Image 1 (cartoon, rainbow, N blue to C red):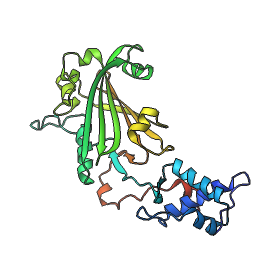
Image 2: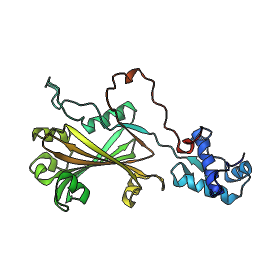
Image 3: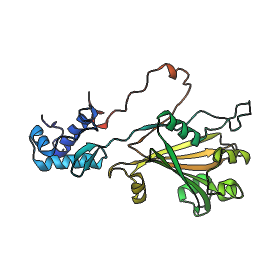
Length: 284
């Protein structure tokens, strides 16, 4: 077995890491068995022990592999959950026969997806009053540093960290409502907003990827090289912005799904293929 030549500037350990990614993507290794030991990889590729070690270090830092003391090196696998970032519109009042022009209730979407995948969803809830960050204040039309109400949900699937969601509200909107209570609300925050005449009818999402901070890394328990996907949603009613929802996901456990346009024929199509591995994205 040889290491692909690559570019002249590419160090040998990086080319070895690329070939190991290829073998992982092709299913040569499974989570049930340890990868070949370093001496075996030395023999397969005809390289020095340090080259093998550096290549494996790269994949450990990417979150693809994990070293288990006394057991070997294994694939680090997390079930990936498709999250419908825009669910179908739903009625807040089941007795109302007229369709409501509103967004789906996120908590109901998460519960449904967990049930479909046969996984247990648990949520820890917090309510805080904080000073608005510059970006949050700008999106809500406030001055930076103004007091806002933040409702945080820490979601876990089968006791594995899944997402951190924070909904940011103007203090004046939340004051005197159940949004100020340190508990989840039956029907979701959306029920309170509808009762206030602030039914959310549209939203704009901003998606970025970044590395986690120390506290985020500790909570998500991801690999040292695994980024977060950060979805920042600004919701609107007929009068203007209602709230900012910032949700952070570990990139190795989540895939955000968006539907655009008429999808009436989607049910007749085959299931989507698995995502292309970056190591093979440029392959012919």
